[in-house]
Image: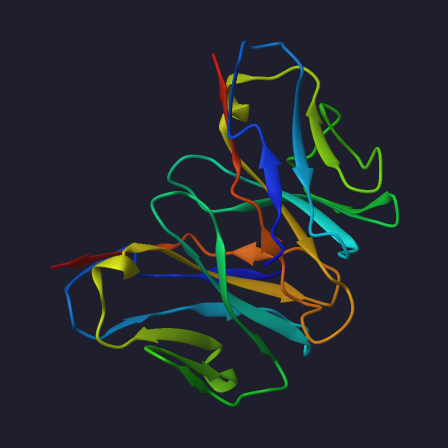
Length: 114
Length: 116
C-alpha cells in the first residue's frame, strides 16, 4: 500500500523568508509519480509539479524548487522569498502506475505574514 | 486555458435525500476521478472512471455512490441516500492519458456538500 507523510502540520513565516515543506512517501513499486498541489483559501486544488521515480533531477522554477531523494523517499518543496499569496495548504501526493489514484498526505498549512 | 468545472459550488441537502454532483472534465481527457475532502482533513480518493466504466474505487465508494458519464462532456457523482458524514468538499479531476501531460490530474473547484 502507498502512504504519504507530511509531518509538518502548520508553518508560519514572515514574508521574504525561505520555507521548506517536507514530504516522505512509501511504496514498494519501482515506478511511481510524486506531486505537489496547492490549496489556497478559496478551496481549489492547483497542480504545482510532478516528478517521476526514474527522474531524480531536481528543478527550480522561479521561487519554487523541489528536492527529490529516492534514497530517503523524500520529495521536499521549497519556496524562496515567500509572499503572502503563498499562504495555502500544500499537499504532497503519490501515484503508483499510470492509471491509479492519487494518495495524498494530510497537508501543510503555510501562513506567510507580511 | 482549459479547466475542469463543477456544479453546483455548494449543495445543501437533508439526510436521506439523493444528490447529484456534476463535473465537466477537460474536453480531450480520458480518465476521470472523484475525490472528497472532509473539512480540515486530507483529500481522499473515491473512484476512477475510464472507457465508460469504473477502473478503481475506494472503500468509501459503497453502494450509495454511483458515477456516470451520461454524454460526451458530463461526469456525475450520485449519492443515493445522503448521511451526515457525507458532508465534505467533492472534487472532480481529469487526466489526459497520453502525451507529455498524461500523468497530471487537473482538479475542478469542488462542490461543497452539506448534509443536515
